[in-house]
Image 1 (cartoon, helix red, strand yellow):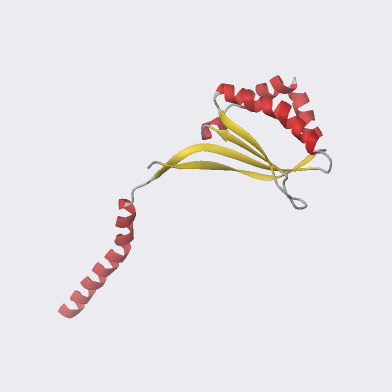
Image 2 (tube, one colour):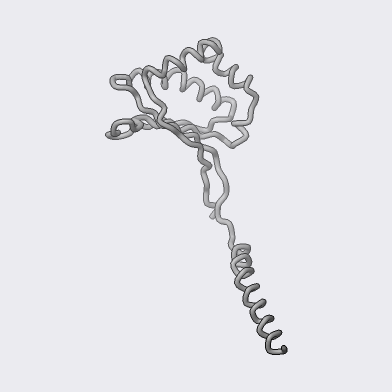
Length: 152
C-alpha cells in the first residue's frame, strides 16, 4: 500500500511538472513587440488596355478620398504598387492604405457617405462610378493586416 501511494505521488508530481512547466516558461517570456498601424491591401487586375484609365481614377477620386482621410487623421499613408510581369488573372496593381488603428473602421455609415458624396458629388454618383470601374478592373482580393513593431 505504501509503495502504491509513493508511486501515485511520484506520478502526480511528474504530471504536474509536465503540464505546469511550459506554462511557467511562457509566463516568463518577455514580449518584444507591440501593435502598430493597420494596413488594408487590395489586389487589382486591370482589364487589357485599361491600366492607364485605372491609374487616372486612382490619381483623382481614389487619391482624393485618401487625402481627405489623411486630413482627418485616419489614414497615415497610402501606396500604389505596379506588379512586374503578372500572370493571367493575377493582380497588376496593389493598393496599400495605412490606417492609424482599428477604430477607424468602426465609424457611422453617414461619415463614409458624406466623404464619398464630397468626392463624387453625390452618393448615387459614387455608386455609378463604382459600377463603371468594373469595366476597367477586377478586384482579385485583399486583406487587412496589423503592423507589428519591435520595442527593442
